[in-house]
Image 1 (spheres, rainbow, N blue to C red):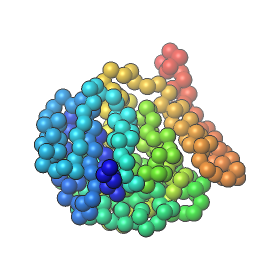
Image 2: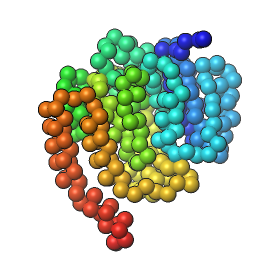
Image 3: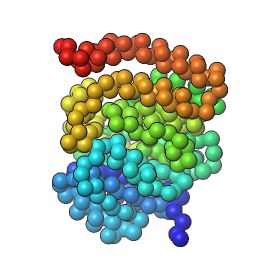
Image 4: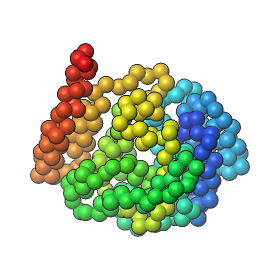
Length: 292
């Protein structure tokens, strides 16, 4: 039986014909080469299958599979991780790309320190053509020994969510609930993962995040845009998204290996956040009950 490579890259794709070739080129050109790429095509209707199959034919490290139907974004992200057997894992998205040394440098960090759950590089934002680069500061170098401090710092500082595209320790990622079915569950995942280990921000801009009209963060306040990006084609838009997000934070704290003092301190912290968000949560209840 052939042992899995040290790291697996999971690439969930859907109708990504415009950008997926650049994403794959930036992955196969990494200076660290002992990895495989698992592509899960979410029933694309454009040329994505042809492009991905061509890359898989040319590079044996690339494995392509296709879902019979669109299962939604989160299940497809979770699927590529479930197919991985490597001790380290990296998600990749089809419209972003990475500097050649990203994998090598981040992998060096997580292999040298067993307390690190995730190492991700600093980011540069680019437009649809990969132009107009703008540095972006995540400020999520979370290496405190206290999981409570790491959790609250992430909750206070996180804005754009892309840190999970770094290199993660699979054993810690497996302990989480993974991505939920609601919009914004990537933040829930990161908040849960940081309870199990440290986040190390590599101080080089090795990740290029592309903003375009079909990207998830293009219209962050548009429920219609987010639902179109997030859910399976036949699935109805999920109700009570805010309530689901808050519930997932509480559930993560309940499941994590925390001291009683830290657990109840985080319950109090999350309770305050629930109160701060009461207007949005009330609107969700009002809308669902038939109010306008």
